[in-house]
Amino acid sequence: MIVVVMMIVLLILTNPNLEDYKKYMAQEEERLGITVPKTPKIIIEHINFYLFSTYTPFVEVIDENGVTHLGIFGKFFKVSDGQFDYPWWLEPFN
Image 1 (cartoon, rainbow, N blue to C red):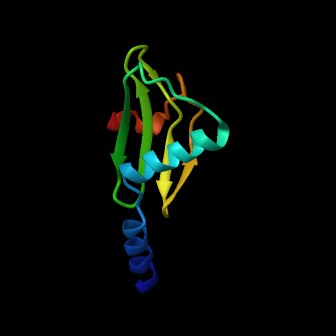
Image 2: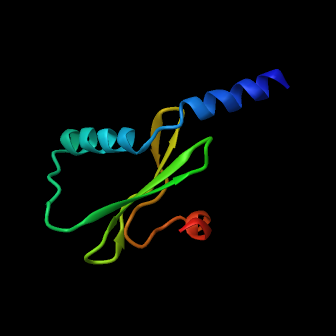
């Protein structure tokens, strides 16, 4: 029981926030040599589950989702391919 409580506390403390995601995306864009145009308004959908979070950029002008990332233990993992591949398990929270 103590191990479960410690894992939950660790998950809560290492749950990345929106600023962490923005830093991660800036590093990825730099690493891949991608330049994001400033013209379309990009909204980042952040769903906080307290133990982990999901982040999906949404391009407002063309109504298109970006790649969804799962943030857990201070790291980010790709869980969708973007565009029309929005994760089905996030639909109820959208």
